[in-house]
View 1 (tube, rainbow, N blue to C red):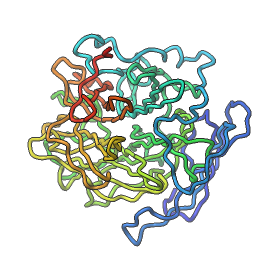
View 2: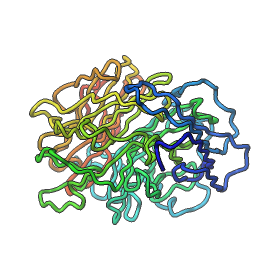
View 3: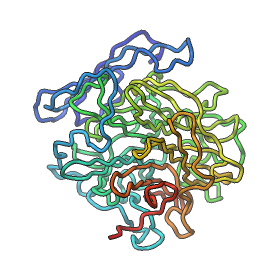
View 4: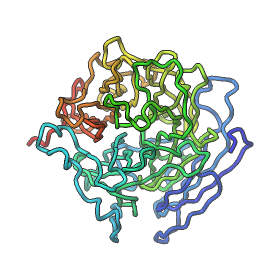
Length: 500
């Protein structure tokens, strides 16, 4: 492939019950699906950039990506801009999810709560905050989990929580997959041990690409799920847009990085305990942002971006702050034709992790606006940088709140907050102290906390939930949850149970 090729048109027809390869050629995948007149989900790439920072910025290719989906619902409106659906309304929420009709290897292992595990007693202080542990032996997520992306949906009949996350099984150290878990309360989760089989299933939903030229052949990790309807996506209803980090086998040479900092990409939770025997410890592989689209949150079609590998965009030039890699592309909808992406990289010149921002009209073609946050003050929990940003626009005052993972001088990981009035460059750290630190010595997350995901829960209490990845002794990982104390997000406490 060549990113500078002449104008091309691509069409892919994919039924909703398949997991297609990257949309590089015209392809039709036939699977079993109840016969209906299919509606077409079409993605049009913008011809012009949102904000042109250079007169030489190359015009986007004229692309048409079509997904054939089994649906009988009428088409959405024909507005010429992306419109954000109410984030609390689930796509296709007026129809019940299809439950598993036949027994499968995934079904027999999927229906169990993950709020406790064999390693931690749910009533002990050591499991405080833990809501999702490693999967069962031989499951796809038995060795490592992390990168939680949590969405809450409300309907007249029920409350549903979706969590996308990355996982890895034993014996596959370098290959991450993406999975989906469901919950009725955001605490007790139903998970699957294998590949999803239907639109009501849970489990593994996306693997690394098999295309040798692609940017995501080694590992993939979810970063954000945005629910949108758009004239650029002609579908019967709003669809899920998954932004994720893809890792290739291309190794990045680290030059002049601080010798005190353990630099690794992707980061592995099997952290070094001082013996130096850590599989891929210290290796930095190139990562780039990717996009996939789905109508049910389970079966995903990769959307090819501007970069020749299929990624949305490339790293910066040699002396730019994001020249090493692009990771954790968290995307939020600001307004009509205005999406913002927050991502991190390692700023070699300054020797710290940093967060930058890009902007888009259509969610496919992006323009970088630069770095917005770097390392904190000397001696602070984020002295060596910030990463894995999660930005939420507050329903209370309209301000933008960023939860981020801070890296201390000794490599320790904690979670901090920053606030901005417009979500662009005017970011102010909430306080010098972290809002969530590693737990006590016997805690399941006593080695580090990070990869935050903020969820604002509407209601009388105006509660905030903070989902995060925790690391314990031996590098064991899990997903935890903390709850804000009151309506202000000045402090969080780990979840310990329901209080009546």
